[in-house]
Image 1 (spheres, rainbow, N blue to C red):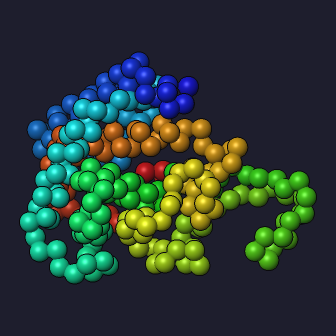
Image 2 (image 1 turned 180 degrees about the vertical axis):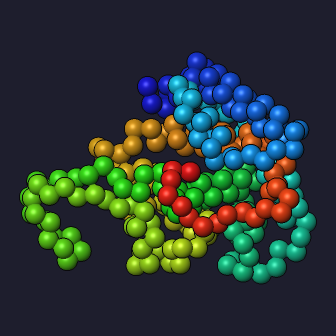
Length: 240
């Protein structure tokens, strides 16, 4: 049910498009009435209406146009110093100029992958993975773990460990530019969906849903906070 082939099938993608369009209509009605929207709550409800998966050709075209506008504005600016002197978008544009095999499509794809990867590093959906029970006594990091002990893997703490990550509390998507981090769980410094045989079965679905909903909402609306309100940046307990 959660395989890539099933998620990309027409029956599942049609359901996801229907649910997302319903969300867009709801948000549009609220916007026309001048009412504020709790995006986190609404997206959570939308994602729970699963059955899905999506074919994102149309949505990808919309996102491409959005990225084109952003990148065109930046290309028209003085790129300044090379390398680490600019933000991660400028680094990508500089890399494109230096590598003839790299196209603007590569820049946009890397841009989205980096932002998504950094978001999941800072805020994994499940901070504590499924508990493990070692079959024999093991020593890890100087700690002795007796056999049959129930061990919870704190992936949230691993993703914020200063011994593993440079400036771990800083949201810095360009840290994913030169590193081979992915969601497969093969790198034990970054595994937001777990690893091994107990890796999250919905990993492929989660990746598709996040990109699809983000692209649709960015394309459909011009976002701003309510008058007199401020964006709350303090972390709180919860999934979203």
